[in-house]
Length: 130
Image: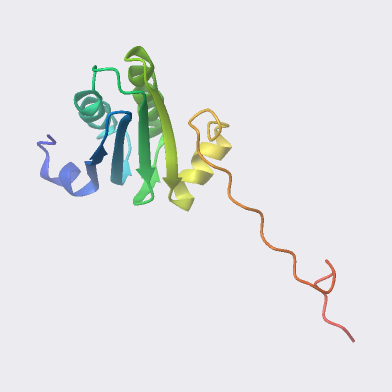
């Protein structure tokens, strides 16, 4: 558990579900250099060694991901792989999605692509008519 009260308010790792095939984990708050190691430690404690095959991460309520947080996610992925599991991000906050995309890690971490915006009917020219 996180011992620093300030970090406790900024990071939460919650087990959402555990099945025979894997588990779902939500990461909420912010991950930066002050608490990235805590994320890795908590994930290492949650990840089973019993043959589960999949870890689904919900990062929908993770509003900030600094460079140390990116590294922490990669460390979590590595731990999962060492245990014979695949780590996959099911959903991510727009801020986190942007960081992972800029780092070219969205696909590596299994983050689904965002559907492209729908083109309005009537053509692609959005200029007002005269």
